[in-house]
Amino acid sequence: MPDLGWNPLHGVPSYPAERYAVLADRIGGILRSRNDILLVQAEAVVALEAAAVSLARPGLRALNIVTSPYGGWFGQWLRRGGAAVADIVAEPGLPIEIETVAKALQTGPKIDVLALVHAESASGILNPLPEILAVARARGIVTVVDAVASIGGHRLDVDDLGIDIAVIGPQKALGGPAGVSALSVSGAAWDLILSDGAPRDSILSLADLKTWVDGGRRGLPGTPAPLEFFALETALDRVEAEGLENVVARHTLAASATRAGLAALGAPAWVPAAQASNLVTAVPVPEALAPAALIAAAGQLGVELTESVGTAPARLLRLNHTGPRAAFQAVLSNVVAYGSALRQAGHAADIAAASEAMSAAYSR
Image (cartoon, rainbow, N blue to C red; front, side, top):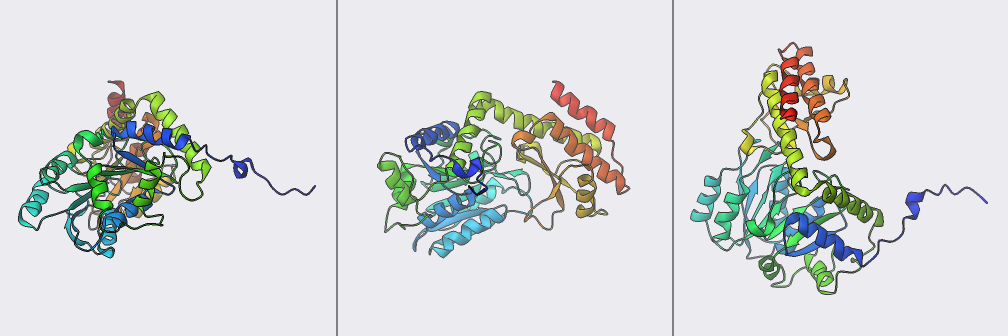
């Protein structure tokens, strides 16, 4: 018999239809939401576009907060569907200011939808989500929150905060697969989505997934990729075994220790702790140095540092402490490698003091 090169991964059994509802409920528990939970068989950017496509139509007015390329994309998707979109663009690499949002809501036309990213992996910042949601909720505005880089890294109580649509992906703090994502959708969001001829028969149609919810939440539309859903189950098993609060605490400690190490190194972080993501810490590159050279020097030590995305003219490097990297060894390696890269470029860096500061943070 010829060798056909079969691999066990090619023969993964179908995902049991009755377990989709269980998965959705487990995600609802992580989000602390009793809203409908939708499962999307794609990376989270598809779920975000699906939310925009399902909401957008002529006559809809949206306020779109842009603190990275992702916010810019969301505004484009809304406009493509005919919505009138006002973008509020933050200073490069910085979070939006609540005063800017409040002023836009007070002085502009009536808004139906407000969209923003919570935590930005692109620049390591955290937008003032509770304050923004409070001013939006007071005006009856439907809110859309990209929580892909915050779920598991920051506390997120969807129902208490009043988030109408929260979009998550498990590939960051939850340590899961990138090929599946989820949304929570409130009654107010459904009222807006299902009015005036919602798009149907599309991978980007949330209305189609509402039919899945109403029909008992068994087999998803299309042909699901079972491996992704088995991987998501495994990730949720790990999160539940560790405890969500402990997962958040682990990321909080990793961020705090990284900041302490950078301060001792003589390279303070980009934004104050209250404005910083727990998943990625951004550090400004000294003016005389080239980010690419520092990245290459760290890479020689086996440590991956990356440049910020969409934050020009800010010159930032990102130290990643997300998911399994939210641990002492990865945090130590990040900062020591950055210090070594600075030294190699002729810039002073107290690596011993940085190591001591990080060790102290983890010893407390």
